[in-house]
Length: 479
Image (cartoon, rainbow, N blue to C red; front, top):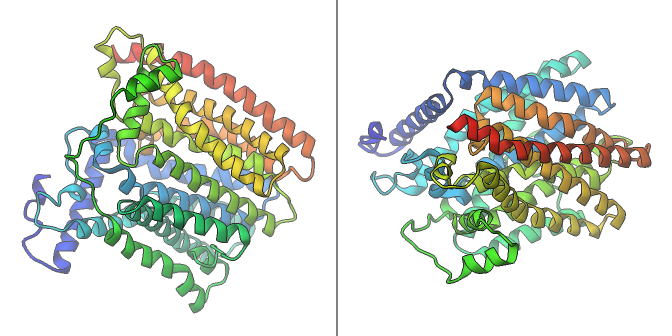
């Protein structure tokens, strides 16, 4: 970016302040250029979806404390996704945005250290998304919370702690990816230790997050709740070591072996899987993303069970959210090429989407099933089997909807308000009855299971239909 050329004229806090201002301006201009006037309506869409979602949950008898816990968990997951800049890296942004150099990746062209750029980038994300996403989320929550007698001060506290939870998610993700640039074994050891602490009950993550301060505001909970977020925000940039873009990796006959193993005649699925494997984070980022969503879902279900007299179905809940979370895999299998590229070849667009669907399933299904298998530690095989079926069917639906609505540009959903609204409504139609079925499972297990399987099956059939129509639709739009 040309306007950043003089960013390093003066050292110290002034430099960081100017970098922050330029990054904020850069982010706004980038989104406005990509999505035009539609971008400005995004906060209103977030507030509307949040308000409707909270209202629907209250209709099921879910207490507002449980709703607040769930929203903290979702914000934490959102922060983890934003923090995966360390996993996605420059290659993904280059493929998504074209020949664009963002300030955060300009350490080699500006006399500014990588760590400073990354630290300022984290502050920018915190401020930017607090206003664009977290504040509208709090507004949607407040619209229902005020009607049931929750005081305004409590709603202000909700916004403060969700912002802190977002920062905790970003810092956690960046720290793990930073440690991963030095030792993948260390990352696995850290994740395993955290999982073991949660499963055995020796580690209470709620008290080590801003949500703990939301539950019991005090000086002690402020230190224990916000302290880890601050620490990780410092450790993440220090631990992260950017890779060498000039490095090359090759594996003789890897393409032929994989293509033969999956029976890929056109080679589109094989090429896509290899592109993801050769990108920053490789296929491990799929496993990481699914693992994070799995952990967040388990914690949310446990929190709901503790806050209410309900005994929700872990299987249905985990299967639902893992299936919805497969959207990130769709983003990765479409980020390295474009529809225009395929228009130059004698390959029908419906076969292109069929190849992408195969790659999407090859990457997301094993990861999701692995975490469902891990839940056998505390769940019955029958409940895990139900969750696995729901996961597979919902994942098929998510692919169909995403392919039909966004084509090769799923990242536009982030700020393209009409697309976001259409996509969110399509997911809500399926996820709402599934979440309700999970919540009321203890009251009517047979009915809840039947509803979950029935809704998932219908959704999968719709997804298959949409994925088959995606090719002809985008072929017409692009020609």
